[in-house]
Amino acid sequence: MTHDVSLGNISLGNAADPYPLGSSDGVFPELQTGESAHPVSAKQPTRKSVAAETKIVLSATQVRKSYNIGGEKRWVLNGVDFQAASGECVFLSGPSGSGKSTLLSILGCLLEADSGKVTIADRRVDTLSVAERTSVRRDNVGFVFQRFQLIRGLSAEDNVAVPLTLQGATLADARVQAGDLLGRVGLETHRKHLPTAMSPGQCQRVALARAVITSPKLLLADEPTAALDGKSGIEVMELLRELVGVTGSATIVVTHDPRISKYADRICEIENGRFK
Image (cartoon, rainbow, N blue to C red; front, side, top):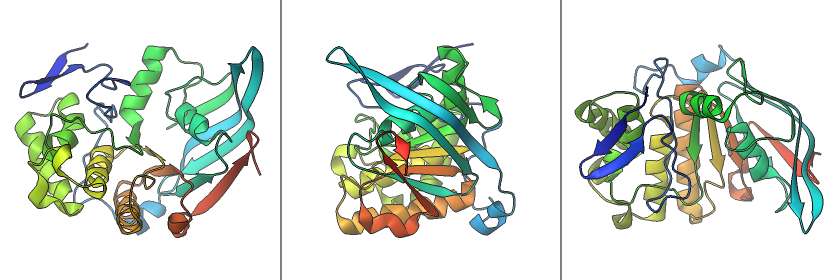
């Protein structure tokens, strides 16, 4: 069943697919609209307790992806094997064009592989229809983008509240939980600010809060510090690790930023479409 969702005068469209890639107002992830989603709260287990319950959340086997460039097939991914466990933070590194972002898009059910097997939260996704992959993405995956992709016409509070309204929460209840989470990322006094009134570092904190508010099993971050200065980038990564410790999300970070390597549990380097 689908329905339209709106916040004030801004319509968010069809809640069955609340991930309008390429829309003029930016992109917001379709985060956890299923009954199993549990918003972040101070009562959630700490990272240490989550680690005791570690399980494989994401598995990819022999993933291959090609593009037709100038009439020739170019293999961007050529037999990639990968796993990530709950509570684990894995960095993907490698030169531009090595396939990092392509792999992230496949793992997040945004892009189909040519071949290979991908499993998210015990469900094989590479054999699913577009609608079924949308459902898996909505129910299990959170996203953080390089350019934040906040909805320009919504306040920080309402940007963070979007995923909860899409899972049926009232706007009032969603705003309460969003406000609590904004306080956790140091933006309690910025709840009513529009994205245009915030710094890049503040916008990325809002985006991070939005990504984790429903405790996704899988969190994918594509160059989350690339648009930030050094201090803001470190602050965002500190918060990401703290929040992942609460949610227990398996976290995959694509990055070129050597300043943040200390926040990885492990680093996987891609070169020529394969892990080194």
